[in-house]
Image 1: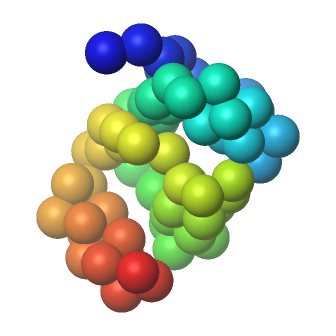
Image 2: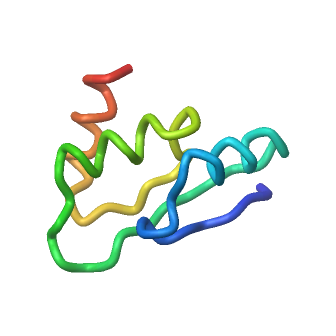
Length: 70
């Protein structure tokens, strides 16, 4: 597996698109703090086609949100 893991504050649509254009994977992690929100989830799962891996403090909520937009 070849790709990168970025912190949420650095996530941009351009980065996701570039990584995917290079046929690589992009993962995302969010620091502790419980600030995951529907707006944040929308950015994670839609920017540049969405990230391939998402490390979450609320995995069930993240999967439910992901499934609701696909």
